[in-house]
Image (tube, rainbow, N blue to C red; front, side, top):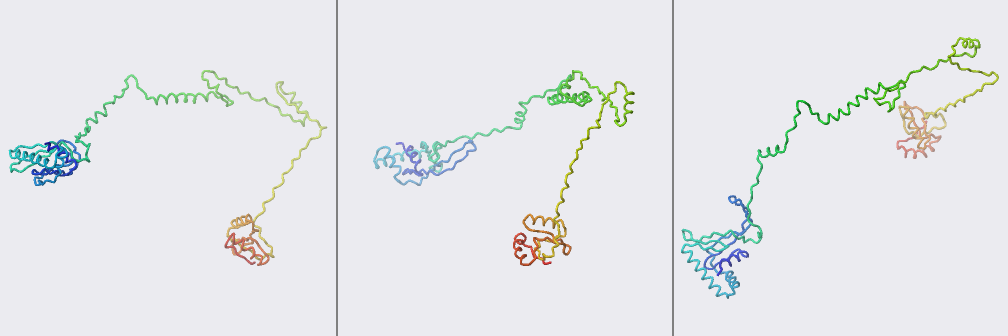
Length: 352
């Protein structure tokens, strides 16, 4: 009978499998662990142990054997008892009983049954597919390796020979641009003619420039038309090469006189600081009083733009008084006061 096989199959589904007359195999949850010596990582599993006190028949193993081998319950119990008797005899002879995928049973010096579980099978179904694997140490580069890798691909810089000096390309480009510019900056002013004009044709350094020669303008002799004898004398004494301008006048032709029309003088700006001296208007709606007359003028201009008949009504107690409007009676002033207060809540009526 394959007793070890049946025990192993039941341990996948149950945490305790009792062998009547021998003991019980108990499976307990075991967390993942790292074996430092073997340098391995073990997934979660069921840790097996053996309890010799669990000898009562619970029917689990007997029924499973009857199902697998097609026997009835009584015959299954009989076969299992025969197998257990054989195991006990072997143990008394101090032999080790090996149960495949379960573990090894043996007696210690005190004749007590000891159990060493097998590590070949993981009975935890949640860890199915998770094998035991070895962890490889990470190989870290040493300081010597870092220095070697850093300078491995570098090449030695070129050293200029004593016979010649190698200039950087940037200096060569700068020299190629600066030297022609300096040459033209010195050469171009020497090619200016007296007229001060220059064109692109004159920039050719291999062509001789034709410079202009200054020719003074011809001298004209002033002639006084009022003295005819003086003119004749000057003509007689003058050189034949001297140029003259002949001017003739016809006394019979009346001169054409052009009279310029004078521009009319612009009207003077009307001042806004006219002081109302109409003694019939005694009631004034005051909008403000100012020590500076310019500020009073600004307020008058603003009120006129807003539609009020504003003016400066005079100077009272050292302050220029600005009025929204002036009226002959108090009733008229009271009628317009509401409009003034809508514009300025501090407006008030002054009686002069």
